[in-house]
Length: 277
Ligand code: SAM
Image (tube, rainbow, N blue to C red; front, side):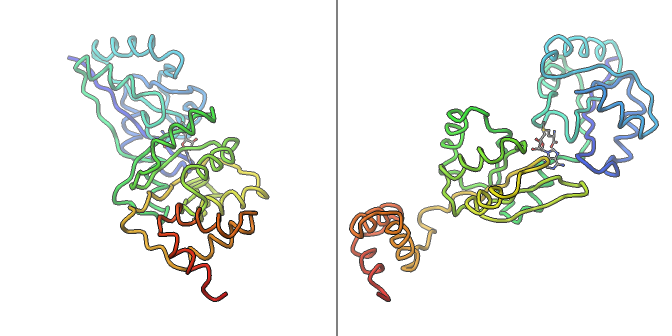
């Protein structure tokens, strides 16, 4: 009789978030596959659980995956954990689940901590429809291509981000979505210094110019507003013309560019620009 694979979520910051079912599964499994055995050992020590650990991470997963599948087929039960949160979500584990499914092994996912859902729920953005985009590339070109593919995305978009890459990512987000797009920066979730900054992409860039980013981030970016729903006011047109003139454009060019950007007839922008003058 084959064993099973359990996906066991672990706390993303607050150790109190380990559920009784997760604890029980870790206690009862024959062995635990862990992304970083040192990190998981600390958790197991905290829980008072002694169990055989095998490492399963990005660079050994092809070979280790096969060994784990063989052990499960031989009747053992494996609990898979990652460093934090739900295994297989931007974590090693995705491939192990595929391998087990292909081998006919039953896979059971225990619900629990996951940074993407925790962030979305407190973001203050629309939660009805969303897409999770994981980590953006460190290469500017690939990051830009990824974001360009989301240019017209209307669902709320969620990204994972590391502090040292945050500013470059915010710059790329601004290039594609504009400075006014709402964003919630969810930092150090469930930890002592948990913080949610609900602002615009431009506001976030300005904030982190003086405040070095620290801790782990989830970025929740509002989706695009469908063109027919956008209500561009006369004031918006006037403000944009003033901004562009301040940036050095002639009045004529500022009106032309504003009309293009806001998809308005040129004469409407011209009249808006004259208002209150
Ligand atoms: N599997 C994990 C999960 O279920 O959320 C995600 C693992 S991924 C390798 C790590 C990323 O998750 C971090 O770079 C950060 O973007 C996000 N993350 C994890 N813990 C977090 C926390 N406490 N606060 C904010 N973001 C967190």
